[in-house]
Image (cartoon, rainbow, N blue to C red; front, side, top):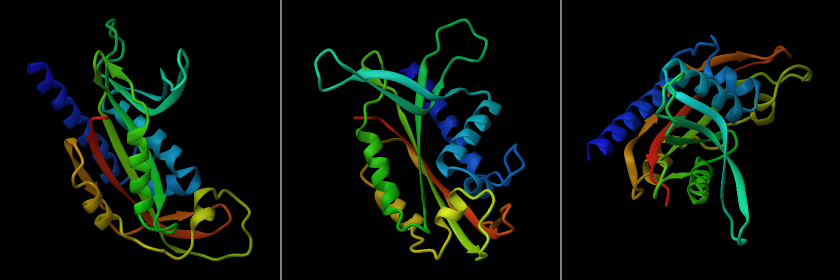
Length: 228
């Protein structure tokens, strides 16, 4: 029982550090999370920034960790990757690391549509195979990121870095992050109660190399579940 309490305590601290990542005005890179999302593949760039943040908090974490799992075909295995896998071992220790938590991230934009699509993506992640230690599955931390591009300049010249920003800027179709996640999280078997971070600060600004400027923010949902 003491061991389980210790694991729960670690999971609570991990969740607090992940949630803290989204409430930090500017991460170690000096860029706002909104800028990071706009200049690259939003999900992958924010994933990399979160990994750096967790390591700065002394978590032993690995990005794109791979594992083999059983498939529907006898004697065949399926290989899949985990966005971030966190272990209990400290860097430099000689003991075998023990998986503490899988972290899977999903990203969507209110410029694309309702946050319902983001919730469906999280449900799909729950149905995927997950690693286990002994007879117990490794807990799954689900991180949903919802970016809003609030204002943008419309210019003819689109030369320069763009990625997410130029792909999805446009009128906000439906900004319903808070309501959708308040409803979706009910009835789920949460190990740690979810945290919803809705950015209440003024919109961050991002200026592209093409000269375009835009403002927006990144909201987030963080919760820990036990895979079925």
